[in-house]
Amino acid sequence: MEFSITKKVLYREIVDYVMITLGCISYGIGWTIFLLPNNISTGGVAGLSSTVFWALNIPVSYTYFVLNALLLTVALKTIYGVLVMTFATGFLRGYFPHPTIMHEQPFVAMLIGSLFCGMGLGFCLSYNGSSGGSDIVAAIVNKYHDISLGRVLI
Image 1 (cartoon, helix red, strand yellow):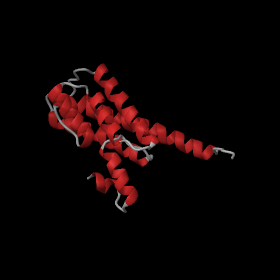
Image 2 (spheres, helix red, strand yellow; image 1 turned 120 degrees about the horizontal axis):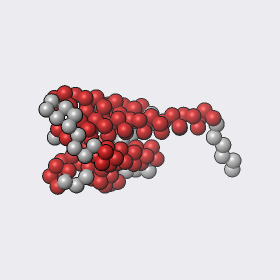
Image 3 (spheres, one colour; image 1 turned 135 degrees about the vertical axis):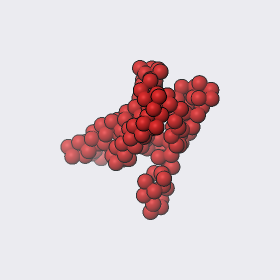
Image 4 (cartoon, helix red, strand yellow; image 1 turned 30 degrees about the vertical axis):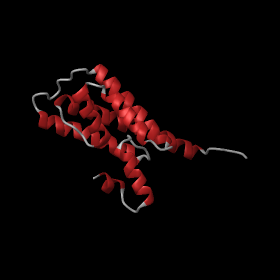
């Protein structure tokens, strides 16, 4: 059996992974720099990881990875997205341990953080990837039922 990859398929896969990487880093910026320091939670696994961080001071990247490991299916791009998000949040928390961006303006921080998170999630989902968490559940529902990813996530 001969296995060959065309240039078009290889290019598409590279673009998918680059966009998933950019999306996860964008989500990580919004979550780590704007939302988390202002005690603003997101939904899904990221929100649960934030709550565990605030309650037990366990790094969000650890909780995020462990919770996603429980949800992961054999989906390479989802596994890749979870690894990039884990790295991005761990790196950003180390590089910006106590960010003070918009610290006195939590509403503006929530808007900017949500913008980064939304754009990041949009990139991931648009390029056949996922950041993990509730995206995995949404992808499963989308696969077996005729309901869009956006509708399932809402």
